[in-house]
Amino acid sequence: MTFFTQFRGLALAGVLAFGGTATLAQNLFAPAARVDNAVVTEFEVQQRQRFLQLLNAPGTDRDSALQSLIDDRLRARVVAAAGLVLTPEGLAEGVTEFAARANLSREEFITALGRAGVDEETLNDFVSNSLSWRELIRARYLSRVDISEDEIDRALGNTRSNGDGIRVLLSEIIIPAPPQNAARVAALAERIAQSQTEAEFSRFASQYSATASRGRGGRMPWTPLEKLPPALKPILLALGPGDVTAPLPITNAVALFQLRGIEETGVPAQVYSRIEYAAYYMAGGRSPETLAQAAKLRTQVDTCDDLYGVAKGQPEEVLDRATQAPGEISQDFAIELAKLDPGEVSTALTRADGQTLVFLMLCKRTAEANATASREQVITALRQRKLQGYADVLMAELRANARISRP
Image (cartoon, rainbow, N blue to C red; front, side):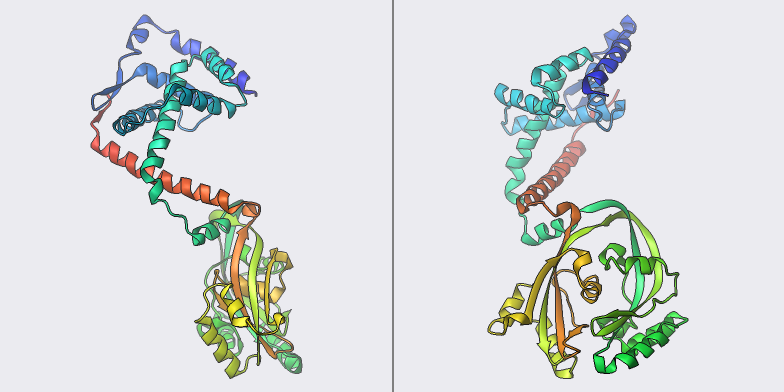
């Protein structure tokens, strides 16, 4: 249905709505509400209601239309007190911009509204109030709005997709398996995979796992499924509570997971297009000396950029920094990165047949919908969100301090 078709249909309804008795016509200018010394008429309510219906806007019932007009009265008073006046040129430009959203010129839009029984003054009042209020909020609060780099990074990684979210409660075991120990570790992993209880799996984790969770018996917190490696998701979804995966071979290690719980979150799932991480390679593998150095280094770095200073003067290959799609990341890296927030570190993995410890840090995640978003676009969106928060607080204050009555 085109925009004009909608107008034609609603225009007939408008004629029928206004074609009532003389008594109804006389009551159109009776007060529908009083806001301190200002009045909202029944005619304005009907006009606003019809206008919102034509726009397919939410809140087209009578009470919502009346409340929007009450709020307009409150806004107009504050705008006037601030000395803000919208020029005729500014109003015309605002109406033109508003009409363009329906792919119409200003004149076409006004004509279509008129055919549907909506006065041009109703449109002008709506646009004028919106523009003046927006200008007031910017003038009063823009200087208070600061957007940090961390907020921008979080926003780039937090756009949500449309799918329902699923989270899993896992216990993990990652056993280092350099070539000389591969056969022994494989046998041990097969034994662990037969665990019948959470307690049994937990004991194995405390004894053999190389992850930071070993002190908790391998227990991980609730983890969104979309953070885990793509190849691991169908394996986990096939498990029932208490089940253990078959041993999963990863570089110089074997991984096992026990499912302790699974649930739908009721909120959309995040889908990430890119994962940025840094890997600093430390000679000595999982020797006590190297692990101690890694623990000390963990206290000295907060971001991936800090690792450039650590690696300065060393061969270029000691530090890798990469940005990859989730499916492109090696399985062992992907498993560890799934547990991390930006700036956090894992030291569970090794390379070079166990002779090199991987100091793995998550830099950031980029949400799929934000893969092409610029930082400037994100800054604008964050600024508008904060300004809207100030506007909501001011509006609530105005309502609380006004005398509002509805006859």
